[in-house]
Structures are given as C-alpha cells and as structure tokens.
Amino acid sequence: LNDPSAVFQIMPMLKDDSMWVRQFALNALSSLKDKAAIPEILPLLKDKESAVREHALSALAQFGDNTVVPDMVTLLNDKDEDVAKAALNALVTIGDKTSLPDILSLVKSDNSLSFNGAMAFAKLSDKSSIPDILPLLESDSFNIRYNAIYMLREIGDDSAIPYILPLLNDKDLHKTAEYALIALGDKSIIPDLISTYILQLKDSSEYKKKSA
Image (cartoon, rainbow, N blue to C red; front, top):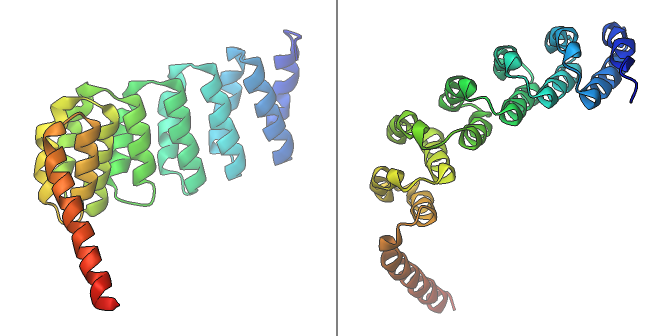
C-alpha cells in the first residue's frame, strides 16, 4: 500500500460483485488517503448494501475533503439507521459546519436518531449556533427540549443560562436543566439544589420509618 500506484490498482475493486471486496477496497483506499479515489467512492454512497454505504462514508471522512459534505448529508435520511449514524460521524470527522442546518433538522424530527443528531450538532457547533437551538426549548416534545438543553450544555457558553433557567419549572426536565446550569457555571442554584436534596433525604427517611 506504500506504492503510489496502489490506489489505481484498488479502485476497480469498488465495482466488484462481492460486497466484501468492495468493503475491503474502501478500507484500503481510506488508508491511502489519495483524493484521486473520491470520485470513485462517491457512487458507493448509493450502494444497495447498507454496510458498503457505511464503509463509503467512513472512507470519505478520512480524506477531510468538504466537497463530499452535500453527498454525505443525503444519507442522514437513509432507511438504515446505522448508515444515518455513520453519516453523522463522518460529518463530525470532516468538521464542516455547512451541514449544521441539516443535522438540526434531524434533531427536530423527534425520531430515534434525534439524540444522535444532537450529539453531532454539539460537537460541530459553537456559541454562534445558540440562537438556532433556543426555539427548541419551547417545543411540546420532551425529547426535543431535552436535546436542546443537552446541546446548550455541550456547547458550553454561559450566555445560554438565562434561557435554561425557566426549565427549572419543567416537571419533566428540571433535573436536566439543573445539571446543565451547573455545567455552565451558574452557581446561584446550588443552595436550592442542596435544600432540595436534603428534603428528598428526609422524605426518604420518613418513608422508611413508615414502612418499618
């Protein structure tokens, strides 16, 4: 594989009838990191085998070429969830922020991949993305509100604190909001958390006495 001509010897294998050969070729080309292979790999994002599509995403990510981002984004809606997750991982690896709107759409979809989208969004974004996240705090969906708090916490900018504070009154997410606020450096809520914890301990002790 140290031979510069190896990439041209391997590329024909991408069209082999065996999915195992195609996967081997993708792994080999990702190791070589010769961008001449990119045009030959791109068609495999539409391969009939989901495992090959995953390998193609992983291989393309290794090249660090953001021209492939639009092709990767299309697989965020792949029928196979593992492929969609691989697309998220590949986009994070490349680090191109142009995919953020598409990833945020996945977060808003409130499906089984929403949290995976939230993790990817948080890794790729910075405080400039906070205004795009804030409307999600008012969603009717528990999952979307949770993901919004998670993303704000992971981005780690304390300008989000005033927007998370109202969620201390959210009966389903007040704990999540508390953890996020502490992580963001809002120490003002610590006394209240201690008081709440003490009350919970007392309630637990009373319950044990009654049960004895």
